[in-house]
Image (cartoon, rainbow over all chains, first blue to last red; front, side, top):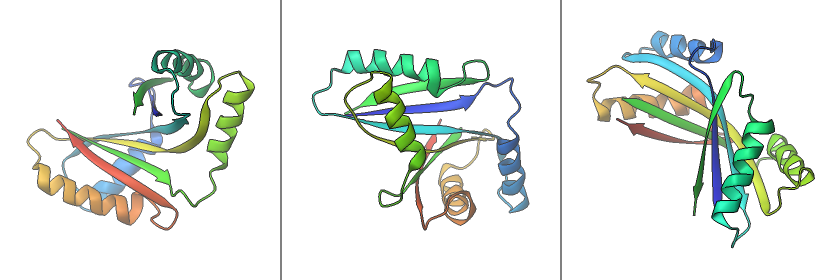
Length: 81
Length: 81
């Protein structure tokens, strides 16, 4: 079982890394790109037989408390088998 | 339409950031974590009406050529509506 956590800057927060990639894509001739957002991806391997509900609760708390900065970032947590 | 690109270190490559998060989770009492991998997440907004096949081809090339480092990283590209 795995947990996938995606942390992205909030829409209102400046994302200079995303802007740089957007400019680079345009320069290199990739058209039709209207925006780019860069975030972090954290994949957490869980021991087999871990309780799904308990793991979701624990990791959601960890994500909120110290893996992300809720002031400027938002996160999405997904548990997959 | 959006493209989601996830770039992670290859399995054989050391991932000190992942190891740090794994240790931190253990210290804070989250048990059952057997491994953590940290990567980048890039979300690319595409103009409405963009051709899906052409966009996939172009972004796959961009991911391989300059958004990731194929020597030490692997990537996953997904196009969603």
